[in-house]
Image (cartoon, rainbow, N blue to C red; front, side):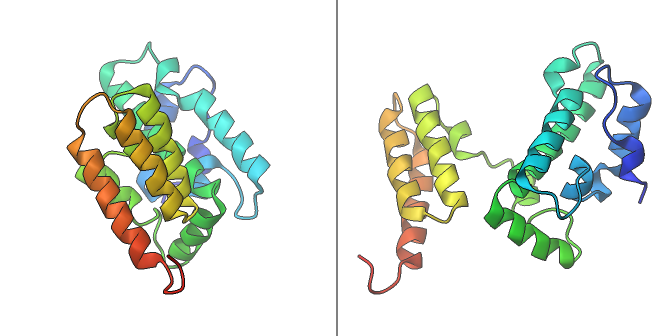
Length: 187
């Protein structure tokens, strides 16, 4: 693997050499390498690293690049967002550290979600209110609070301006998972 530190955070005006270096190492870098933090980094260090990363790679800051280069920037940025999302959530970070110890560079489900084209809950919504409830549902799912997530997803479905079959199906699946995960002494 190329050393990701060679590619790390370009200047605010992204040059093509740095972009090519990132494209070369992106699929071989783990989340810690992508954000340029140590495995022992605390939440503040991860947040600061992501802020620096986002300043360098946010696609909206790279309007002067041609479409192919912007596509590479968007791919790098998306992987950084993924890294931040996982490393900034204690439960996901613990799962990721176990996966990394097994030699996996990405948390299971992340690559599957991107490969299948599946959408996040808020991407399935059309109204702003529904998106807000769906985002809250995703946060509850991340914390393992499936019942509360289902409540928020029901609110999202009700806030939609029309039928949303895919969102309704996700709610049915979430309710099933919540029931399967509840202990016998719980309602």
